[in-house]
Image (cartoon, rainbow, N blue to C red; front, side, top):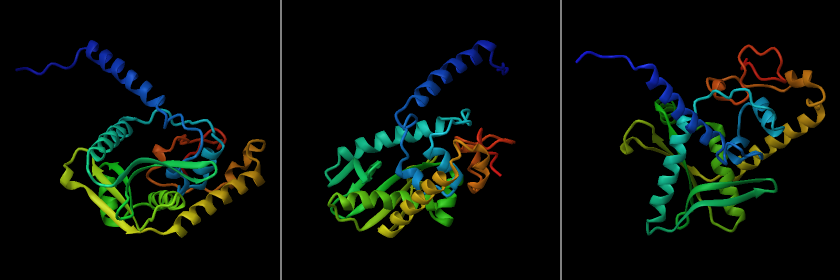
Length: 242
């Protein structure tokens, strides 16, 4: 059989499908979240945190949402799976970490005091997790959840990050497990507060030229940052990742 390249109608249909999927993703509750969440508190880049705290206009709107959509679908499946299990689990439990900062814990093993967060990742992130461990941001997030559960009266002993492979097998799952450390959560909150103080001092909303005084931490993940704007000469419009 001779291969025939897709006709223009095929591409038009693909574009229509993708438009519907993107619209759904853009209007998901997490996409429209206005207050900063636990997953963002441990962000290494102070400039990204500053943009987020001020709800600055996002510039990187072309990032492909498919990985996030897959992650959301897998989280929903996992929630259903644990709901049907006979174990003593708290599933998608809402916790208040402090006024203005709350989040949903993916899973809490009540009997063993283990906070578990599901992470759906690609091959590069999986390899990094196995060889170098989770990021500081991920470790801060899971300990913040632990703080919220502890303050709600639960006994928290351990924190865990379960990494599930995109495009792989369940046997390829990797679990990182560590002792719960409240001081990690407290340090993340202190860092967030220092960023709030810095923003108050600089008043970048009225003095946009002062954005350059807010430090950035460039990494391979810059292209995924919602405030990334390649070759930007004006940090008030977006960050060039340099």
